[in-house]
Image (cartoon, rainbow, N blue to C red; front, side, top):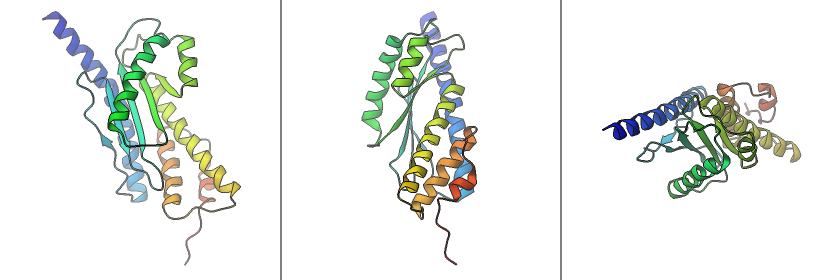
Length: 204
């Protein structure tokens, strides 16, 4: 039936957008895992909601709460995409994450537009930024994830400097994971030597 065919097409469109995002994250994590020899750095991907709109990615990080990435893949083509529509999707996404994800300090939240014709309004974009939500294309979501990781990295470096401390063990691993994972997604803006300077040298 036409309605069923349309629903399948929408589901496929949503799934394709998520898969593009997920594969970029998975490849970046695989690079970091192999580079640092951290076998525990393996993502867990859930099966998603039955309509293939809502998904979770969970990554165990050293010396940190798990990194939880919650993604809503929307196939709306309405122009403009208003905040009220985005907010309804966020409520569903956060309920889904609360039911399935482990407790975490922060969850990276993204509403990805699967259709190239979808555009969020200016006010919707501003509200999304204030709400710490990535809103836009897969490319936009990956850029926002990179920014999220860089922010965590900068915060950790700042904390170590304020304490006049050096990282070692799992905390040193976390510094390197954040840096390498962010750098696989794009420019970081922090030189590697600055990160390494915050790590205690191994004793001979």
